[in-house]
Image (cartoon, rainbow, N blue to C red):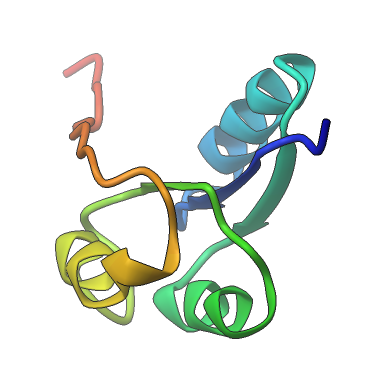
Length: 87
């Protein structure tokens, strides 16, 4: 059986790497990038099963990214995460 391909888009490198590693340990193929442009490039050439995206990306709102490209991947549910700070 072919594993799912999950796209992780977040401009915070450490969070992107952590999410990618956890998803890989779960048996999924992970594609990742720091900006919506990277996601759009993956959408054109890869079969994406699900997307995990930061809402605040440098080049476009993450919700807009997902909404615009929703037909290109299997999972259509949204889970929002917000930055956690120690302030």
